[in-house]
Structures are given as C-alpha cells and as structure tokens.
Image (cartoon, rainbow, N blue to C red; front, top):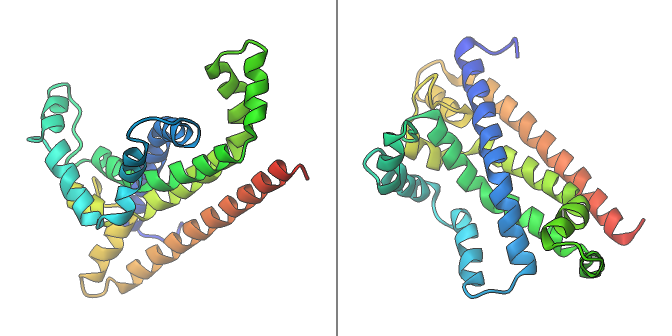
Length: 230
C-alpha cells in the first residue's frame, strides 16, 4: 500500500469501509430472506424472489436513480430520515446502501443454496424434541450453513467493493467523501497523466477480487464435503 498515493489510499480505505458496512448490514435480512425462500411457502414468494434479484437485471444507473428518488433528502424515506439526522444522498452511508443493495442478490443466493443443502430431517428431529423454530435454526440450521453464509458474505463484500454505477448515480464522486475505488479509477482516467494511478488501483481491485473468489471457492468446497459426509 506504500506504492499508493494519499488520494489513492483514501479511495481504497473508503471502499473497504463501504463494503464492510454494506456486508454487515445486509447479513441479517439476507439470512432471513434466504431462509424464507428456501423453507417457506407463502403468497408472493416468486415476487419476493424477483425483487431480490432485480438489482442483477436492472442497469446499475437505474438502481442508483431509484435510490436517489427514495432516499434523497426530498424522497419519501430520505426526508423522514433527515429529520433524525440520517442522510444517505451524497454521503458515504449512501454509497454503503447502494453497494449493499447491488450485492444483496449474491448474498441471498449463496445462503439460500446452503440452506437448501441441509437435510430437513435434521431440523425436524430438533423440532420433535420440543425445540422452537428459532432454536432449531440457531442450533441446527445456522451452524450447518455457516460456510455458505461466509461465502455469501465474501462475495457480497467483493461486489460492494467493485460497485460503480448505482453508487456514482446516488452519491456522486466526491473525493474523500463518496469516491470509492471504482469511482477513483474512473476519475483518474478522465485527467491527463492519471493512467498510472488508475493502473495501481486496478491492480488493487484485481487482487481483492481474486482473493475473495478463491476464499469463496474454498468455503464452497467445504460445504460440499460437509453435505456429502466426507
């Protein structure tokens, strides 16, 4: 990291902060939604599944614009949150929100597949012993799906680190405030002599992405071995 300049390091640090908060905030609802899609039958299930995966289909700019309309200071939710001191638009928290929404489908999908791989009979056995659904989930389902949860979190973190379209539309590209790693690369490519800085940040992006993919693959293999009983 000593090879990076102050502005470059600032963008990397902000990206790490944004991706971390996006992942941590997305985990609880991600686990809940994944469990609902994997285990429950209810009206509107396919609608929920579609909404979860919608950010993967929509252009990121559209997602960012919808966030701006909803969570901007004049939006229906953003205006109410502003009254209690919570601001998303043109703030790093907005970058975390945009990155979290774009990464949410990957998080949910990985956790859902892990939950579906758990034998329902194991959960039923816990229920027959008088345990509540919540206790069965906490002591049976969650431990068995933990590698999948970790794999999903890692993929979501990597996706949040690389999010650009929704983020720049929602919070702009303000150095030191909302300029994440992808935004910084874009900004450096727009000025003469910025290619070297952009290339260094590209190298950092590739290194982080590869590390995340390798770690996710290792955890996925552990899931397969656990399910097969190897």
